[in-house]
Image 1 (cartoon, rainbow, N blue to C red):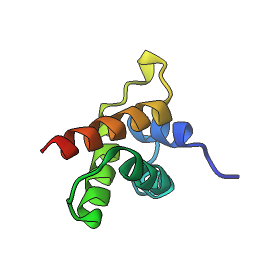
Image 2 (image 1 turned 60 degrees about the vertical axis):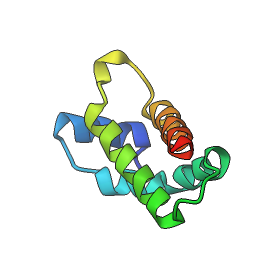
Image 3 (image 1 turned 180 degrees about the vertical axis):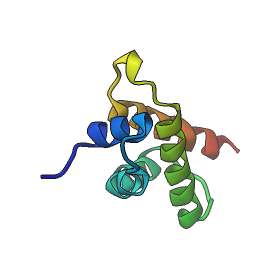
Length: 89
């Protein structure tokens, strides 16, 4: 049975496992969708994908289980903010 994104993030943050690569791969469709919805510039698509992957990795590092938040929601908002900021540059 596959673990949920939330379970993998919690295990990674607590040191019980390292699921970063799996999380980034499973959230790649979200990254692509976010690019399509929020970015309207001329930056290279591969660079945009890489920025999204790095943002997800950063959110994993900053995730605080004590705040009782859902990681997927945090990731969605963070990607939205990232691509809105990049289009302003």
